Image 1: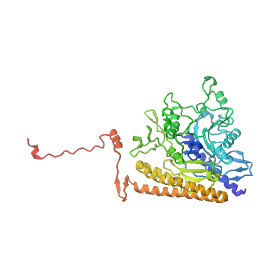
Image 2 (image 1 turned 90 degrees about the vertical axis):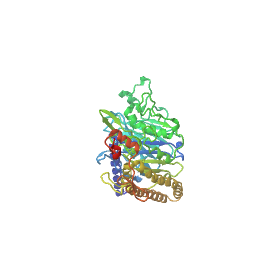
Image 3 (image 1 turned 120 degrees about the horizontal axis):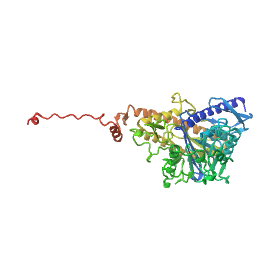
Image 4 (image 1 turned 30 degrees about the vertical axis):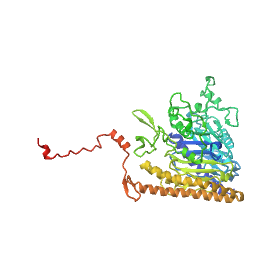
Length: 555
């Protein structure tokens, strides 16, 4: 490999690490900003795909990254912090795979959510953060099982630096959930357990450990560190004489009313919508005493399409008692966003807003498809969206591409730019808050139109790509790259137009009609009633006394 190419690869790696480090710092140390993840097995999807979702929720400007496959002569790889300071090195491998963001050329994909867990188990002497492990696994593994081995072998040798973490891993055949936490300062390796999601089922996690009991003698569907139980006994986290089963989530991330409300509510909302027949109770996430935890996985009422999964990741608890588009806190136009901090005090009493799956703090999200019946270059689709899941538009990026849309790689949190895809989506989402109940339907109409067209195009796109793959690998790469990049830039252009349209139509509180004439729409009566309850006299206009005719004044 040429020195110039090696230098470019190191530059890309450095940028990728910095971005993920920033995401980690914001996600880990500020509870309101976190992530949600859904896992869908082959038997639970309507086309046999394995699907993984991930929302990276933090206040930062993401940049989509592509890392080409490469051969390496170096013996070691530097691991740097987000300032670029080298913390240490790991052994390099002779060959690394191509990666489109968090999906590699073999359709392996990894997502995560941070659960934190016991703070005393963080190990600042460990070398590898969770994002280091994800990146290295995607570059070195072809399957979920290989990825689990890469990640756990690496932390065993070099140490684990992050707090508690839940991982979603998917390939063309399996979906696994893995949870990991460190051993504390000066410890070795990490405590972890990984479970295969049964075929036909779905699972999810959202910033709270979810794995409870697990089998100790079934390596086909469960893997774990050898000291995961003995360490807990040694630390006094678990008493084997208690008669209670060992549950990873309860031992390493003890449930509290706060983390139930914050995390389990999102799990409940995905499950209630995927399997309404189960009638899942809200009691557990509302910390009702004696309420049963939600299962780790469920069987959905029907097999899920990609569109169904998009919908599950777009949620503010609509239609429930916790509907964030309702109530005075939603404002006059039913805006579901709640500005941070998520927890607040009034008269020394602590309160918290609901924490939904869709949030303005989402930097980017993805829904992946891994399809076993297609060549890898064609089978892996990384549906990518920037900003809030509710107002984004997912773009299909095939894992066989070698270039990504330029607008998804540009921009800074410090300066607005029409050239940055993130800023374009962010502007539309933020502007919609001014008259949400009006504008959201217009945004969703464009969203539905474009995503629907992608779904209609996908079978023919796949078919063409498969034929090209049989004849020429370079041709199929060029075809898929051109398609993915073109569609990505088309979506951003449409969103720019949408933003300009909304700014023009909804201006100064007016709503322009079809002729472009501004109309006074005012406020909903229900909201006006709430205003009058708080200040009944302030807005009251005095009734003018009618002057009586003189004839009526004579006695």
